[in-house]
Length: 254
Image (cartoon, rainbow, N blue to C red; front, side, top):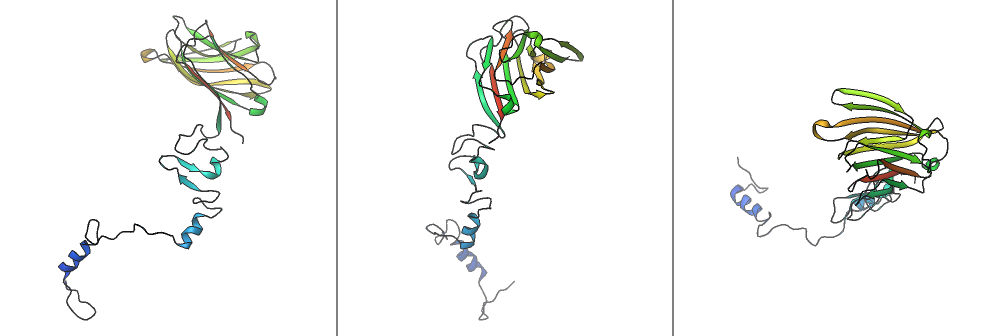
């Protein structure tokens, strides 16, 4: 194919290719935008729209310098999606606020949570990763407001081990359990149902390997009183071992 310029002269394509290469990256006449400043007015206006999704306006979306975290300014400032900022990881996750975190360095029998208000907060979630260091099966109870009378509570349980499934009901505040010298991971949702305080245990896994087990529970505290404190108690004593973690959260409302 032949190409002619506007004067009818034949264009030397080989020379044109060589010339073009001089303006590419590394060429002797490489094009550079270093030192350029300013921006189109349309772009500046778009970035700063009060109802936009990025820029310097009230709803901006930005990546914090030196980090992989994305700041959503409209919700970030109200702590509704992420709490934290800059180059640090967010300290809390969406919609839930941490009330207390217990990381045990030694074995204990009970962990207390105080300054609660279930009427105000509506729900609590208690995450538990528990190690039972004793040579006996451990049961974990949840008492409210210092009421340690077991018969003021009812619980229903379904237990699954391999292909074996069993169920029972008891007049006590049992919420979790695990075999001797074993670990469990569980989650408790605490709320109010029918005027009573109800605890729903999400599927708990306990033990390891070929004896892994799964347990479902629900538990009621037979009163309509507001919950202002909780005690997580292991039985027998000293069955909440070192390395156990308890994390209590409530819904974020602000």
